[in-house]
Image (tube, rainbow, N blue to C red; front, side):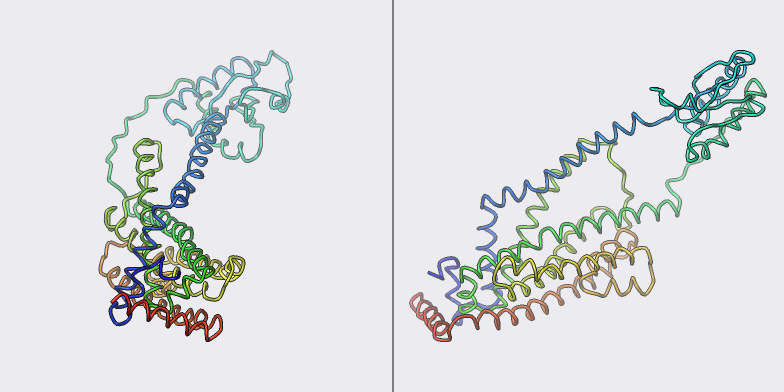
Length: 421
């Protein structure tokens, strides 16, 4: 009954090493999950928020374009209004959006009085402020946040209206450079922040699969059978790498969809600065650091799974782990803005923040050798946490049930293993 899910597990009696047994577990879990209907819906899950986000973004962009370029209404004597609007148009052609667009609201007759505040009420036009008075003494009426920004441009328009025709402006020759040090650093910092956030979201979203799979097999006693047949380290390694393989398949699928969106979006999508190590190296390091972060967090979740027997207990116990991981992400994000400081050094050394901090470093620093050392250290931490977690799990699982039942299960596996030979 118990050996059916892993038919090769009973061959451990001196014939399978830890790595070979882990391969058996990993292969079975990977194939079982990959070809299940639940995995198909798992792949579709993150696509719906992306589609909703794209639609909401396009609608929001349309609304922003509709509400953009507010106008300044002009309420002056007819001659002054014509001069001011002409000056505003001439300056706007040369200075662009820095100069507000002027429209005539009301041309005053000689001796006529008009309250500018009335012009701001009940109008369907996109009027954000009213310019009244004279070119020599202009008055700008409107919300303070608007008129404070337009004070200088309006003064320039009024001065030009008094001066008359625009003088000839000299042509400015442009000597361009690829980038400046400040803009390059700012762009790489944005790329580092984006890569770090994406790594965190993927890790937190996918690492929970390890925990749910373990609790399911623990509930139907399969995990106890495996623990009696093969080393617990092999069970842990097999499940970790099976879930990692499934996660990488999911990321590859989502990446293909994202690539199609990028090709379709073209120039409409935001531009990210090229990272210091280059895009190919950053993508490779992203896969490596996702793997190490996933294995580290997954090993912790497996250890947590040994303390729980139901899904409700899993949710209760795993919540502190999730909160701590969120604080770790904030630590890595802050360390990214403090290069060379002690807080960055701590984030690079601490195993759970190192993948996020090192990926951000790759976007800002072209050196490759620190990543080799970081990956080796991450692998050592994974092996240590797997050993600690498997030891804790063995103590919890192998103590469940009467001792007579446990001895009977071990005897059953030994007899089946001998019969297989």
